[in-house]
Image (cartoon, rainbow, N blue to C red):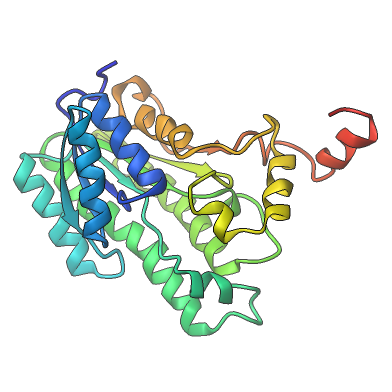
Amino acid sequence: MKNLAGKVAMITGAGSGIGRATAQVMAARGALVAVADINMITAQETVDLIADAGGTAHAVSIDITSEAAIKTAIEQVAHDFGRLDVLHNNAAFAPFDVIANDTDILGITTENWDRVMQGTLRGTMLCCRYGVIEMLKTGGGSIVNTSSMYGMSAFNLMPAYSVSKAGINMLTQNVATAFGRKGIRCNAVAPSMIHTPMLEGAIPAPFIEMNIDATLVGYLGSPDDVAQVVAWLASDDSRYITGQIIRADGGSTAHLPTYADARRFFGAV
């Protein structure tokens, strides 16, 4: 299936995880891919994987905490490829030390709150801004933002991360509303916990099991599961879909909080 043939797609945070998987899927579907990341070593690794599979990609440096860096990266992609058709704003500001400090509104420092908002929410907004500027030059395009299940429902911890993702949901709908009649669609994908190579080393096993227990499918999704949704939203196959937040979460947020306990109560597996 080459439903992205000839499209120029830029993915931020494409050096690993969901971003890398999305870059690979879009390239396999015919897109010319700009692999944008702050880490150029991992970005080049993604480019090499795409090239080995017969796709076309190049690495672009981006720092989503810097407006100048965002503007430069997006303008560079549009200049090098001649246009920008697809923008997946996947990168987030989530260093381990910041997430560890993101306990509740009493525990998180004001500085770290501001850093998360500047990196994740402001950074996504700025990517949308400069992406829209380029897309308007060629008649439109598709923007897909990465949200999270934590931006859909409240969690015990991570208020800054959660609020930044909830902000992305409204930003998505605002961009879709403002530019829909100018040919630009904007949607978001909200994943649950996703099984990545670093997951087991960073998250305690009992908490992973709790997340699996909350799914309706009985397993955690992979980066490719999310990438398939993003690639569909990027393509003209979803041309009538805009302003939507798609929950790619295995049904984790589709039910009452008692779902997992009730399943056991009634003797289900």
